[in-house]
Image 1 (cartoon, one colour):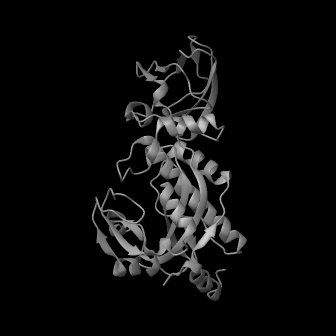
Image 2 (cartoon, one colour):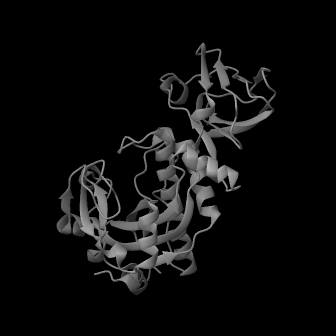
Image 3 (cartoon, helix red, strand yellow):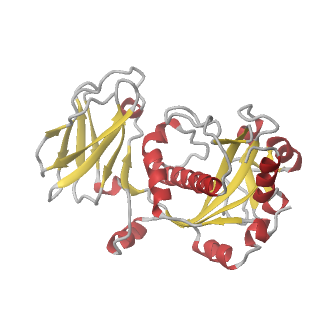
Length: 329
């Protein structure tokens, strides 16, 4: 059983978000969109997931607990598990809490989180990616998001950090059936002033590569790198004009309007590692939570899950003690 004192509360700094952003930009096209989210909200969920995992790994290092990343996957491969502890594969299940009232309750009441559900998607639990003795670790990130355009404008006006992105989701650009060069890409900006954009994609070997291109208004510029896929465009500031990018091979032009850019920066406040269970124990203790249900932390679930209350998990401290007793830490 987990009590409030067992919750592992970890500090947050911008390097956690930075790591999440770096991974999210490349991986959007190669992660399963289980909850059918739009690209920008989905990217923020990816950012939060990486931030939680990295915060936990840093804590393990401070505690001198050995772990391995043998299960970590290339960004083009589906994620199977995150780390191994004591020879067990571990899947760090992370949840972003961005509702201001819930964040306030979470920070004010040590017991608030204990009644919340630890969730595992039903299809994941039924898959064979983890064995019965492998581990689910449940973590939460309390942090703000710019859900609406007004939120973004306020963040920009306040000088807050941000990461503006256009996620390319058109299959012929992002995941073409034939792996051939898109040709020398040509870009043009109709903004009223000079505009710098980062173009990110993949090369012939499917490796990620990117370049920064400064565009003079209404002047055509050609990309310097050879792209076999186009994954994203990133800009340090909002543009007041459309941006177009043309592929001579596809014979198509992608047009990005000023309102198409979204902010994937997550303004993290705190990471909480709540507890853990083996897959077998989770299957035994959990109950079905159908899609569309309201929970303590979410207005509505989007998919079918199995749930166990946080208070019914096992404390992280117990896991570390078991590792040390077995000589793994």
